Image 1 (cartoon, rainbow, N blue to C red):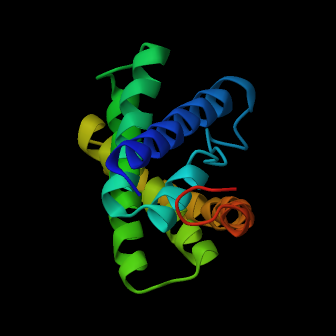
Image 2: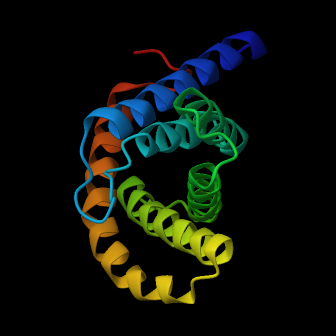
Amino acid sequence: MSSTKRFSYVSMLAALAILLNLTESMFIPPIQFGIRFGIANIVALIAIDRFGLKEMFIVNLMRVLIGNLIRGTIFSSIFWISGGGVLLSSLFLVLLTRSKSWVIFKSIISSIAHSTGQVLVVMILYNQVSMLSFIPVLLITSIPTGYLTGIIAKEVLKRVKVGGKI
């Protein structure tokens, strides 16, 4: 695949991730305690599977940067909390991709890592060690939300061939 074609596909995936992120934050109410489904993570799973690690990091970075820029929260605590979650979930996706894990398992672990990363950033930003007590709730909700996004990503990956041809 030419570099121009690859760049175009990755740009479209980044745009889709930003759109899903904004849509979820604006129109889909949180489940409880601000917990969201994380539907933009579907795009990260597609990017890492079809294009690779670098492209997944680009998609996730663009999602956080541009998504927060559009919402007007760039460099606010929301930005850093989101970035911490995306960074930790991306790092876990790298480890799981190297071990050739199942996409649903990757999604669940990524969801757990995202929640944990957000809690760690909140602990650092606000000096609140008591946030650790929130981790069990996040772990319990990360499993079904990660499973849901993993199922969707698996179905999308069945339909998208290497190189992005449908």
